Amino acid sequence: MERVRWGILATGNIAAHFTAGLLDMPDAEVVAVGSRSEESARTFAERFGIPRAYGNWASLATDPEVDVVYVAGPHSAHRAAAGICLEAGRAVLCEKAFTLNAREAAELVGMAAARRTFLMEGMWMYCNPLILRMKQLIEDGAIGELRTVQADFGLAGPFPASHRLRDPAQGGGALLDLGVYPVSLAHLLLGEPSEVKATAMLSPEGVDLQTAMMLSWPGGEQALLHCAMNAGTSVTASITGSAGRIELPHGFFYPERFVVHRPGRDPEEFTSKDSTVPRDSMRHEAAEVMRCLRAGELQSPLVPLDGTLAVMRTLDAVRERIGVRYPGEVADEG
Image (cartoon, rainbow, N blue to C red; front, side, top):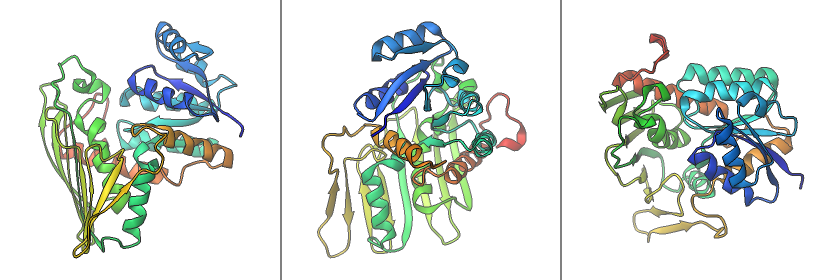
């Protein structure tokens, strides 16, 4: 199978984790890395045996041997970094949260459409085989009509004031880093909510330390979601229907198993069928990108851009409710 050539934009922990996964895939090749620091790019290239290192984003984006760029880094940089790549005609996989707000997300989606260039949000949960199996069971009526989604993601911290999670200029706060997972799970199963309620504890810098959300849909369905960077939570999820429920244990967004509970029946456990892929691997996401590129698809059916935009609108609505606004945003951006 023809190899897909990857460029890595950013050199932090998530970029390193993703790159390590690519190196285990025989149909992927990492050919270049770009950073705002030439030294950082060179160090990253040496670590992973990457042939070319660039001290700026534009050089990576215009490298003719790069088929697709993986954009990592803070949310505040996603619009600019992904935009440079799309302008250069490069396919893009952009980490979540996709951008700071829905306006920036719509700009990137518009650019990709105008240039007929592939674009996908890096919501790896949506590409996980067990999550896809769970979604299919729900659609097939395994737990009846869906009633509620409950999910949380909290880290104990503490994070010092100098940490990026506390920095408004970098899109700090629990919501965009951690809350995006519970919100995305609810969207995956129920679509975009019709009503959003939220409350939060804010840091002195003005970002959310913890946020509780209740989302509602016209049919009466509800999602009770929580995220925190000041409390280590269970990081679990529970999906309840009229005829049963599904429990996702710790690390619900990259599960190794889930359990279906139905009245009058023994609990039924579903586990991963591929023991060769580590539980926290991002290879499923990378494989979906490469499948799409080979098929000539401009977006992934697993992570559709309409869904990405809907998630960003919900995150904007939550921030509006809790009073978090990032530098440079105007009042009508949520």
